[in-house]
Image (cartoon, rainbow, N blue to C red; front, side, top):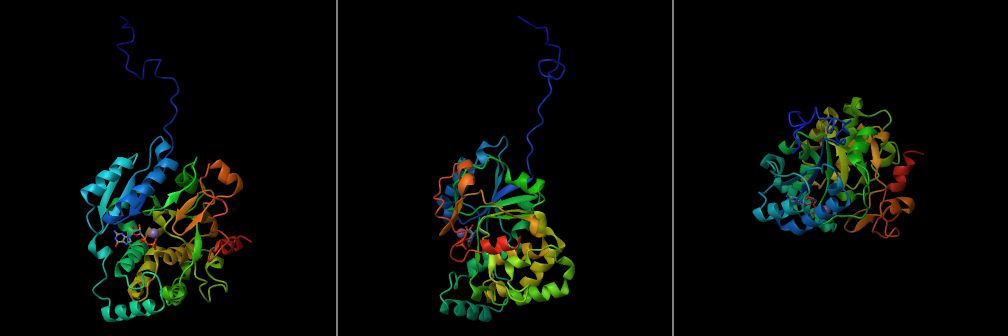
Length: 338
Ligand code: GDP
Ligand code: MN
């Protein structure tokens, strides 16, 4: 029996002291999903997509955070634990971050809902949808489970990822000084945000110091800020910096928006709220179009074209692509750089 090296620790043993490859780089990032218990199978489907196309193959997979204003059921948690490849945490949203605040005039909110119902607007009558939009606008990044992270990737139940991602998008963001990333853009329903732009204009007048010198105003306004063109990044997909929301500019912006009560009197969406902030407070070079990420959220998808489709081994039809159709704003986005 050989005991030659038995007194050497592993680090002294020449067998083990050959130059070690450094541990693979990893970003301080989390995957995050807001979901209801009844969405369990839609949530699992999205997780499975994300794990199979990206997360599972990493040396150290990114953790997941699930948030809900009600406690997740044991069934939800167990089934999710079965399909994630790394760590997972389940968080309860504090009541004051979710529900319609006491100081909202319910009579006025009721009238606001009716106005949208009469116009046939989606989610017109839904208070819970408004809770969700306000939470995603101003509270998700304040949740205690997110405090330790710098980056997040927002995932919703029932979305699809079509292509293999052979690089780490968080490290891409970090290395290229990006703050906000998207895949699909579109126009908002005007009646849901009727007084959003006037509020933003007042905020800009009060706080010129927050407006980035090389901002993307051109994406959100055809007339240099006089009116809003309804364009926004579709926020059901986001890869972004939490520090962007924690900034003084965003904090003050959300406070101003929230004080109007219009998350309830109208139906302000988190997509236009995030997008306007990103377009004004960031330089345009800090916003990234993930053209190589094949992604579907019903009823639209972005399917990578040409070499990007091949490189990602994408499973989507390149002709089924929202980019330059319907109410997409992608050509507006490209105009920003012309
Ligand atoms: P849409 O994408 O605008 O059609 O809206 P969704 O119904 O997909 O909601 C957006 C996100 O918020 C999804 O992640 C939903 O699971 C989540 N969500 C919506 N309403 C609620 C709610 O009342 N409670 C919880 N916990 N999540 C919600
Ligand atoms: Mn959705």
